[in-house]
Image 1 (cartoon, one colour):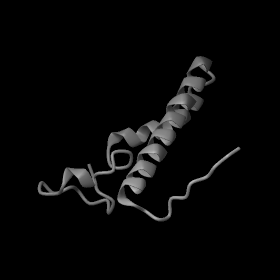
Image 2 (tube, rainbow, N blue to C red):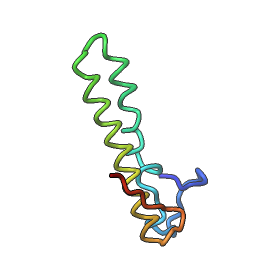
Image 3 (tube, rainbow, N blue to C red):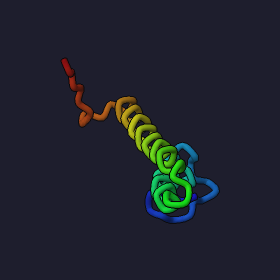
Image 4 (spheres, rainbow, N blue to C red):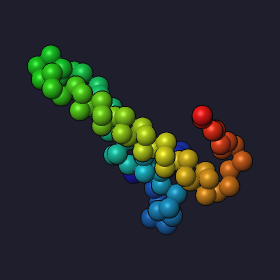
Length: 83
């Protein structure tokens, strides 16, 4: 696992500083649609699920980071009301 500076993690480094969506193998789920497209001619049924996985990754990352920013009191988060 690596940190934001792409250096190996030290044994002393706080595990809470790890971005699970960027610093772990979970990040490769964001590329699942590429794999689905590459096998699409052979297995067309893989394309849609691969996109669902990739979009799920993006939405989960966005939700996680938004909640982190709100918890920190980040003033850049703005509320939008639709309707």
